[in-house]
Length: 252
Image 1 (spheres, rainbow, N blue to C red):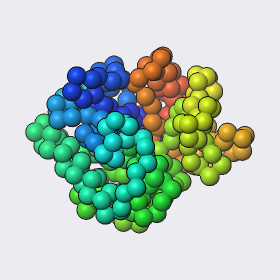
Image 2 (image 1 turned 180 degrees about the horizontal axis):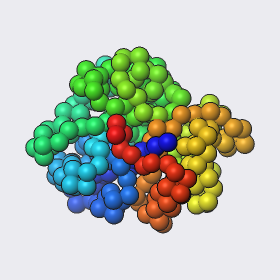
Image 3 (image 1 turned 60 degrees about the vertical axis):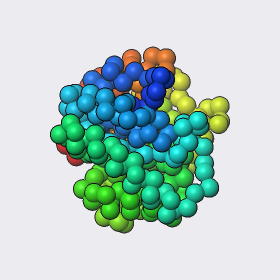
């Protein structure tokens, strides 16, 4: 049994810095690098790719909506054609820095509102997946487990990796509880770790109303910012190792 640990990185831009990329990288196996639309810039992308390569972890593109002020978490009225183009644009930007550092993009994971819109809307999900496939059909596509992100990626011919979240509550339909709700994030460390174990070992999760639903888990999203974040990720690793789960990069 194996699982990947992914984290969103490279979210600083200009004079603004966020998260603890240097600290979290030794604890993860895949990095989702912001591509300049919701966060990140050319300097940050350059440094993040360099750091990820030196740390021998998988480099992933993390394209988002063009909404720097809203950190890409606000829905936009945007056509599938435009979504295709903004995803392609961002993949090209990150790929340039990968070429400079003699490495490659391993996976793609949409960010924020783009991720959530694709999980619920078939046309949007297809546009994202088609852009990734047309750019490079060998890329691994990361999407929310049991949603349109996964099914549309598989339809176009991509290898899809089903993502689960260590610290987020789930709805009955497998969607994440909106961050606008007060109980969207698990704050109890033990509860979150138990959720991780159930998702990885049983391929199930307990929803916010207590119902058990099935879901596939190929990669777990963790975070490097926030209080006690690093300790939490270390605890996840230790618990998975004790349970005999191999923590392995996507595609590895």
